[in-house]
Image (cartoon, rainbow, N blue to C red; front, side, top):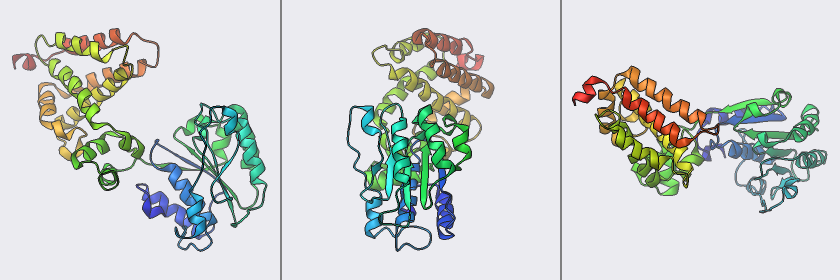
Amino acid sequence: MYSDLIGNSDIAAALRRMAKARRVPQSLLFAGLEGTGKKQFAIELARTLVCGVGADGEGCGDCSACKRSGQFDVPKADQSEDYDRVFLAHHPDVGLIYSPKRLIRVGAIRALEAEANYRPLEAENRVFIIDEADKMNKEAANALLKTLEEPPANVYIVLVTSRPDALLQTIRSRCQMIRFAPVAAREICDLLVSKFQRRPDEAALASRLCGGSIAAAIEFDVAAFRSLRAVCLEVLKASICRGGFYGMLEASERLADTKRSDLFESGLKTLLTLKRDALAIRAGAGLDQIANFDIASELGEIAKALPASLLAERFRAIEDVLKNQEVNINRKVALDGLFANMAKHVPFTALQD
């Protein structure tokens, strides 16, 4: 039931109203940040459409149809061809198109088209979910258009994606788009504590740094983050001290380690969160308004040492390096340049301290 899902309660209410009025569009596009529960909402909608006893616009959650609708046995396979099919749930009127590979191929969409032309076996409706729909190659996307233009009666297709702009405009125009918002940090924190037995302090930190993504919060490694954050915090402290550039160069060596390519991007993103929080503190934000609340006092010292204009300038400089890393840049040179620029603009008041 929708009440079991986290976040986007307004979308749950809208889907209930549609179902209760029997006005659910046959082609839907669930779009939003990765990890906000879009696929789970799609499965809940499928339950609603195949449940025989549900009321108030959603499945009852207790009948055989509801229980079987969300159970998929997706085998692990090595070949892309093995995913050229519709994976039916334990309920034969609910299907899933899914591929862990780079692309969803045309074979999978043709299989969906064939399945969509069969009459429902148990329920009044058939529901097909295309997960990570932005993975469809051009052939697959074009093949889907025909089904979206003239969907068989009682067939509903839900596309799920975190990159709606990667879909063909002709596909987007044939679907009613529902945009999912990031999940509130408080709701994610409660979930981490109650369901995953995380310590409250760790859950609070993960929930504020995951960007509203439940999946990212669940996978968030607090210990690893704190270790990396300590390096980045030393960079910021060194950037407001005379002679601190040498310490920044040492940090550059660690963050640009060729054996740990993940550290470069993670380090820049961590620097961004610290700078963002310092800017917020400078503007008068409280502990409940910053992500790194557990080191607020240290960030406050950095915020006090630098004018807001310089904090914002450094924030943009870090963003630029992060964007440029998509191009084939020399990471060590890029970091050295960034840190040299930060050290060059140390205010006189900071030097006096």
